[in-house]
Length: 148
Image 1 (cartoon, one colour):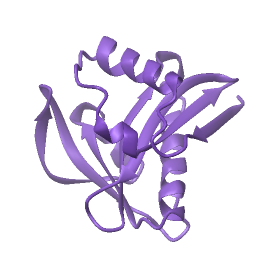
Image 2 (cartoon, helix red, strand yellow):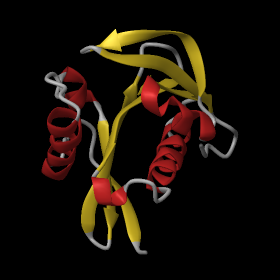
Image 3 (cartoon, helix red, strand yellow):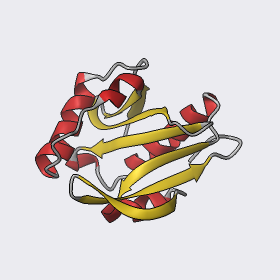
């Protein structure tokens, strides 16, 4: 299946990414505060399958030195369980390494912690609540080649 991952310019949130995030996080999962000030400080990725936008994520510099924060990883239902999340994480790791990051962190929903662990992320600290949903901070130390 043909796919492409496209990154936006810094701070430019594409309409397709907004639509995917609203559908997944607001409509499916019931989050209210989906869009925030970090969107204007992020690079936004869109994953296209056969020309259709089906997945997204955002990444920005974290407050910690040499650390990128990844978030809002979301896929339309038809693109789940096909390895596309892993590919998007790998692409994000490569972009972070190219920008000089040494690690990538994210706040994972606890229910999908296993997915991130399978991609090499490790939990840090204790779970916490975000809009009533348990999350956990996870980190990935970038290898020299930068792939996740």
